[in-house]
Structures are given as structure tokens and as C-alpha cells.
Amino acid sequence: MVVCYDCLIIRKLESLRYSNVVVGLNDTMGYLFASLDKNEPEISPSTIHAVTCIMENVPFINGSPQNRLIACAMKRDSLIGGDDFKSGQTKMKSVLVDLLVGVGIKATSIVSYNHLGNNDGMNMSAPQTFRSMEISKSNVVDDMVASNAILYELGKPLDHVVVIKYT
Image 1 (cartoon, rainbow, N blue to C red):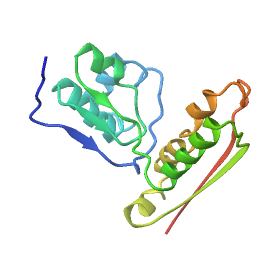
Image 2: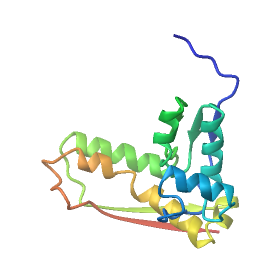
Image 3: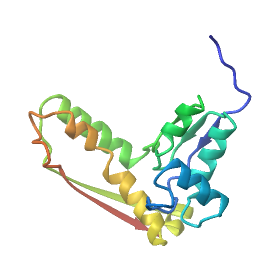
């Protein structure tokens, strides 16, 4: 079966504010939809865009850290994907850690330094936006480390520090 779409939404905004998962607000799809109806400020723009795409059956590729909507997309037979496009320094870190772990070399510590400018720098001045970027940058190597139980003991994560500066 071939499916054609008139539209595909690709959202590439890594500098969004962090949205907490709050019990009774957005922890279930029912609460999320009720919060959308009430225009709750804790619901992020990327969540609103993703829900809109799901409800309209428009494929959505998300470049921001936010992946709680997969179950909703599956129920509606809608396409959704992505978590972070991981470009620049984050991509380089991903490639190097994958290479090291793949050949059996155990990295014990990573310090990531990101210096952002333009709108990214301005957006990072908001604490929730900074938290979103910090999560995105710090969890990029988690799956690679977890995939090698010989090098990395379960429950003992890699020492990973993320430094984000902006001008």
C-alpha cells in the first residue's frame, strides 16, 4: 500500500522551553487534551504542533525534545517521529561515543561545551528553555552506553557534564 501526503511538518527548534510532565495536567492524553482546551501555559508549542498534526493525520517530525505523543499517534494511525536532530557538537559527540563503545573502548567522562549565538543564545536566557537544551544535549549518549553491558555496569551511567554558554 502506498500512502501519499500533501504535507509533512518538520519542526527544527531546539531552543524551546522545557515543559514538565505534571500529574493531572499533561501526564495522560486525556489530561493533555483538557489542558489544551484550557490553554494551559505549561503545554509547550511543540506539543501543540505535534497534537495538531496527529489529529489532522499530517506526518510530523519533531526536532525538539518531546516524545510523549507516540501512543496518541499510533491510535490515530498518524506518523510522528524524532526527538532532536542532534547537529553540530552533539552530533560529533554521538559519533565519537558510538565509535568508542563499538570497538570496546570505555569512555568514562564526557564534558560537552556548547557556545550558542543568535536566537539560540537569546532563548537560552530563559531557565525552562535552558533545561530543554540541557536534557537534549545530555541524553544523547545514554542509549549507546546502555547497549554495552560489558563496558558499562547497569545503573552506573557515564559521567557526562553539559556546559551551555550563550552570547
